[in-house]
Image (cartoon, rainbow, N blue to C red; front, side):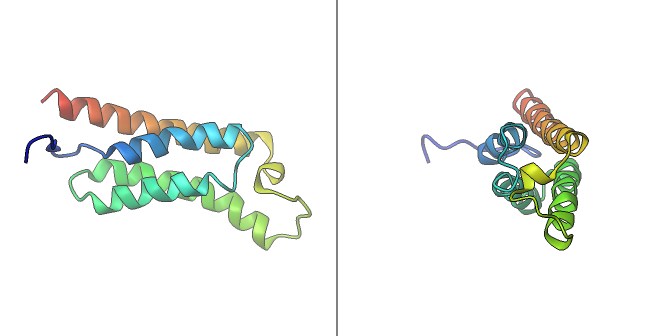
Length: 116
């Protein structure tokens, strides 16, 4: 198996790391609804990797931060044409901040696992 890398315990996948960094970029860029795709990638990758329990909590917090405005936008009597237009500045900041925190947590776990 030449050319393959073995991941140590608690080493997040590259796709989860890239998706985690994509979330705050997409939210701030005005793609709130589409940011659900990288959020789903981060959540699924965290749940599938049984070696990293800490990242599951971060991914769960991100999913909750996303699900709250999404649910209120879909269930409420809003006339906003998109999720990004529905979210006010504090909600956008919380979602982008949570996304950045998850991305940083993934980055820290990844660096720690490569230095062991």
